[in-house]
Image 1 (cartoon, rainbow, N blue to C red):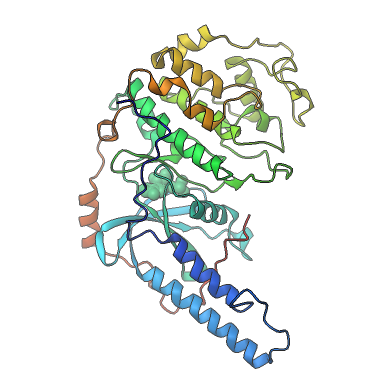
Image 2: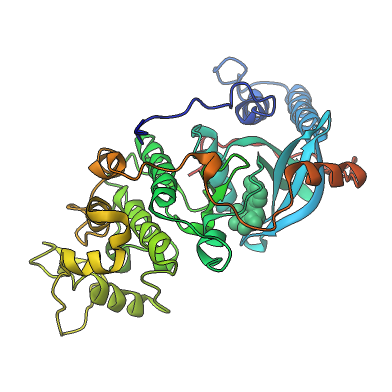
Length: 416
Ligand code: AMP
């Protein structure tokens, strides 16, 4: 049976006892806003100073108590990895050590002493809104010692797509596997865009793999909402190798197809098992795009020369034809190459959207996408059971500092 990439698998989030990201942020949010309003009405201004102070203390106590309860639900274990703005630890539910989680502890950033680091705010805000089998689940959020923020995320034990791509000696895969991974990635991106969220950092290293082989889009630290088309956005997003030409030329208004370009480059990389356009500076990246795809000009992209940072070398490289792509990426077949070319279209107005990608004919052509359980896995990984047992032997606690200061009041609703 052909697997339609439009099929969205039922999420297990509702049955999952850990799934309470919404309930975590909302009680804290309510608690923090309670001093202004318990029913949406602003408090009268003439509240006696003592009464106002008492209300404030009560609401802080409630926020602290809720935070404490949330924190106590989890036990933190060994470090799993380190990102730019967080350390990630393995953890489990205190009442059930077989329920593993990843606890992402946001590093204190000196420049944000007055508030939360924007990456963390973005990650929480967007992950709270997005519940999809191909997007990492945010189970909970709590603050710990020194008001450190901790994100409790779904634990994804099988590494990421980058590990599989790079391990050419031990990991063998073919067109059916690529189709399965690309289907999962495209559904995740389509779902983000349906919900007006741009991810803005799609790359193999942000595509984590669950125990059942499901690929999950992670790291929403650069994500933002794009519901207002007139609002300018920063062009300085997306890891350079996966950054589309409109951002390299400094466009301030862009859409979901910036992510589609990155998806196209992940597709290319899955096939050739090395990054397709890997510049070592922005100018170099533009030059490599010109070489690999063709020089952006007014003929193939009306208006491109008006973009703030438009610069290309004098010698114009004509757009590469289908034969060029077939020679390089032919293992995914004619239809696969057609889809790839549509994602790597220079002019964002002509580039395929995530929804159109899902309707492309490639998904229904042979070979069928590999079933999750048959997908290649990273070699030498520790089993989930083994990790669970290790954790049981060496339990840590999320935060020893019981007397920590008043917990940070969380209100992600207003964050950008
Ligand atoms: P990040 O800051 O999201 O890039 O995470 C840093 C590293 O921590 C990643 O490269 C992974 O090795 C690991 N990691 C992050 N999230 C998870 C997760 N949900 N499950 C397992 N490992 C993770």
